[in-house]
Length: 376
Image 1 (tube, rainbow, N blue to C red):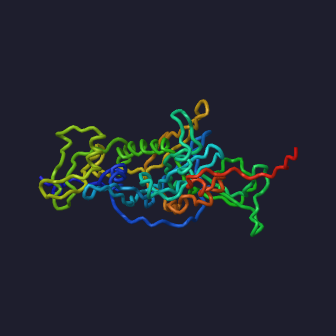
Image 2 (image 1 turned 180 degrees about the vertical axis):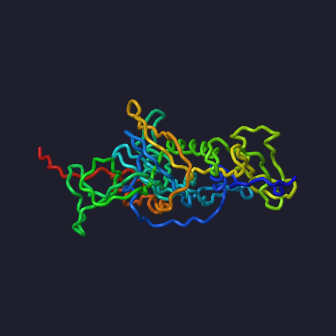
Image 3 (image 1 turned 90 degrees about the vertical axis):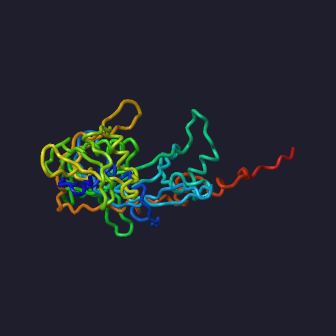
């Protein structure tokens, strides 16, 4: 029976994680942007000494990804865009200078012959490391969110490490920035409620956010009850068909199996179309089932100090469902511009390496020095 004819409340199709998997298969055209805003200022860091409450603000960022295709037995690679609420990039940590560069070689999976110049990538290939050795440059994926942090923020003058004011050479005025007011700030210039920042994360921190998303998606946004949402039917995504694929009241699937089914194309034998499945959900607390999203919740976050040299670990202590107050006027930041790959000029300046030397197969000759002639 077609479930489009049943009087069941239909929620937003799929969870945030399901939609995130599906969007990675949508195609678009990649249009690179020029470097603009500074990624080093206005960054959010989850505090270690106390907890803070935040709200993630969804954007619509184009993430280029490499797709491999086979045409007449020949492999071809093309770049397609995935539009998602957060931004992704590849980072290189320089163990010598202790700085982080954004990779300019291209999306992960780009064939080596089609890669653009990137000094850390070229250096790693020219100086391969052993099995138990650490190279100079690391490689890791980074994830960036737009985040609204609640609380009172104060506008204050920026100072350097020695306590002196940072002065703008053009205007002669000191630089300013917003900091959270915990009651110990002096010389406040202005005060406001809430502040928008960008939050750059490691894979470990990103996984913690995804675990919180899984818990939030089991909540009903209508009645605010936790673990109240149940997926009852998975059906064909064709609006004119909607035939049942799986009736979960009769067939038992694990959460992982349900998510895998929801985020995969399904070929319907009834209509002959290949679409992403739809879902019908119910709430065991109310009659208006609405699946909550990661972006419907305020998150209580902090970092927990660890022993040794390990970085503090992110912890989501709790979450609360409520509509975002429109008075905050929270809009997603232009993360695509802020986190564009670093130029070769910046890479050469920060690493002290020369691109031409790395791309050349010939060893660099030793520098010529002046010596006194030996007359003996």
